[in-house]
Image 1: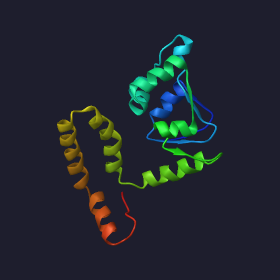
Image 2 (image 1 turned 30 degrees about the vertical axis):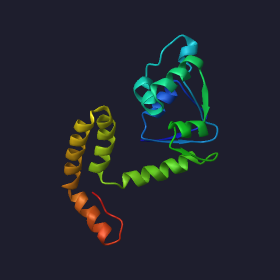
Image 3 (image 1 turned 90 degrees about the vertical axis):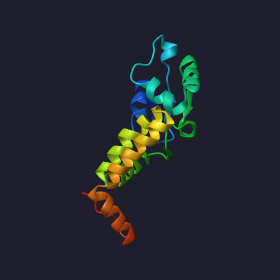
Amino acid sequence: TVSAMFGAVIGGGLELAASTHVRIAEPSTIFQLPEGRRGIFVGGGATARVGRIIGADRMTEMMLTGRKYSADEGLALGLAHYSVGVGEAMALAEQLAGKIARNAPMSNYLMVQSISRINDMSQSDGLYTESLAAALSQTTPDAEEGLRAFLEKRAPKFR
């Protein structure tokens, strides 16, 4: 999933944005987890997602103080992958979503489902799981088409 962000990406909005795979921020975007300043605790996955992105230490400080980050600061922290001009986020989101949709479905599935799980594993388990995902993707008709298209210097046509 691709998110185009502008304005307040706060609390649950940041939790939702952190669950997307590609995040694009316009200049008006501000990131904040003010729950600590409101006497509550996050409940929509921030500790598992935002904490993984920016680290537990920075997230703790962000919640304790209610600190706000700008779009460019969010980009530097990894809360956004792209920082664009005013009104440009949706167009880039649509362009990137189209590009992603033209990938082979199996490789997209494996990337979305495997990478974060492998990151939670020991290195040896992660390497083993990666080899299984690679073997699975490399034996598909789409992998054959991808290699053939590369050799023929053309765009692949996946199913």
